[in-house]
Image (cartoon, rainbow, N blue to C red; front, side, top):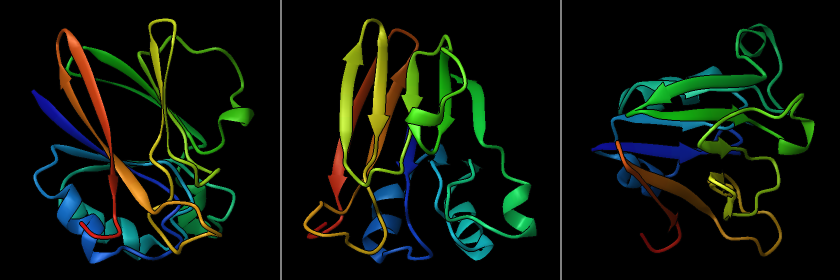
Length: 151
């Protein structure tokens, strides 16, 4: 079993609740709008990190982040992009991770799981503040959202 932490739209705020929720993860995916490289370094102190560039990620450090990312973990193909509406093509993935909307989403589309962890950074309007954890086994995917207010 592999535990994947999924976080997005931190906007340079790594809450203590997020650190606790990501403790014990084997890998952390940041789906963009990191806003400063120091935040990725803080996450890397918890687990290895893969990240994509969001629309608010600017500067030399941000240009080094890919706009889209594909990798495999525990036999599952994973695609990451900040804004799912900007996906350049259909991609054969088991999990499609995106951020941008600040709205948590976990939706099965055919055999694929579309996952948006929501925003873990500053609260926007009345939207929840959350991230996601995904338990991957060779034959299953179990995803849950974690509220960061009251963790």
